[in-house]
Image 1: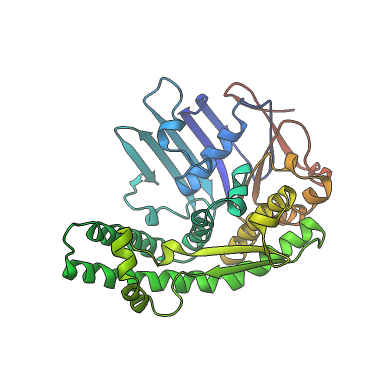
Image 2: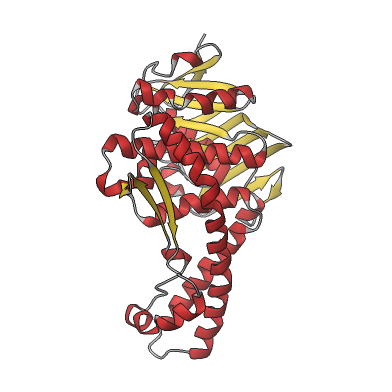
Length: 359
């Protein structure tokens, strides 16, 4: 699978951009603030309809304009033509000229994994960030998971609204409780099944990057211990006090331990960064194993944050992606990628919202 063509209109600092990409390794060179990361952001938006920078659509519109447009041609098991338009008044997404109404009907048109500085939040950030990591992976690989997650989120929101009422409607609360429990049990089951599959990949990636420095362990800790419905009933007093649903998959945690100590509290900055990269390597390798082809890899100056030994830990993933005729995009302010990749590179110069091939 690869991104064959990208078209941008009024996206970030790009007034107009039309560029074709072959499979292989693409290096985006240029000074900071020229638009290198914006290309990666646009590709990730095509894959997930989200920015990996954690911003909304308004922040991605070129200054002074009303909206942005992204067009993409994706070549995979099938060819896809994607169009995305966003403004404060109108949002349109189409796949092969068919309007998309539900996210679950769209995901999979392009598979991508991003490596960026924001990945540190997987280790240092809140439990919500780690839950989203699991949910994205399951949404990309388990048919129906995204729909269950969306229905669960709506049911919890509705249940919380009932709990906030001055006079509790017991019948309505019971109805939403039944829905939350049924959907929540499915989410917990799917996440529980995923951990034994993703954990060995993460441990291997971390060991490869850190040269066996520490032992990594991942533990999924659901807030539901055994019986969701019974535990919700036992938590009734707490729920009335806080006026919200206090247990369920929306409160679960994925713990990351180095030598049996929480990485967020006891890990060094280098260990945290290595662990974040290891998680993303595991994500890419898991997707490759499930789908039978590698996702597009988007690497935003991560090479500059890792020393030579740690950078070399990425090589097996990059080489497998290259051998499978996949696609890798890297941003660099200088030529600091592993020298082993220098044989077949597409180099691009990015300057002031313009991207041009080098050589």
